[in-house]
Length: 255
Image 1 (cartoon, rainbow, N blue to C red):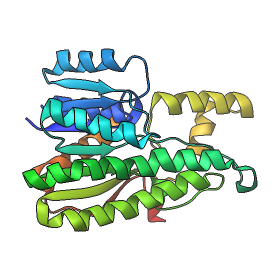
Image 2: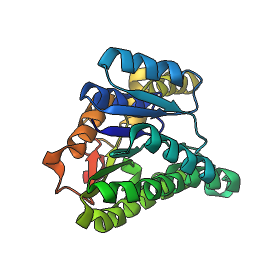
Image 3: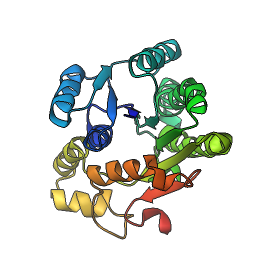
């Protein structure tokens, strides 16, 4: 039975991906800072009859990351599928953008993905199998104002994916990026309510005029669709798909 590690997986997109991998019969390692992570792992294990584990490692601490990977490999013998999903955001004009926020976002969104990928690489080469799936963003392909650190980190994550794909090609290791537009997560649902209240407009107007303004298809992506795409990329059917950036954005980046 193969093992999948999904960072940032106790809520939102990461949680949805974890559920899809559990449904497909993978061992699942959850990661996040939420206090309910252990409970979530037990619930998934009980429901889908797979082995699970949970780590609340701080991804801003490289030593903690390496320690986490060592412990997971000892527990599960390998990490066959790595999904670098953890990410944070901060919105501000560049002249007011705090340097500490820039450093934090690049550490969590980009550097941690490099450190984890590096840590699992030797074991994947040894097994002649590995799948690295980086959750980038539509903002890994196009830019928006006031998100300089986030956009930079997601563009760089795609570049890193391409290098991993080239270096892994001879060892059965593939690397791909998934680039979602807006996904209907609990966090986004709360943002819709907050913006409607602060701007004095309806929630429908927030969705169509603000969030989905750049998408020709005026629909949110579902968490399940991202998870199912990750499952496909982890499969044998996708063994020659590598170095790609797969947009799931309602046509946003086609323009």
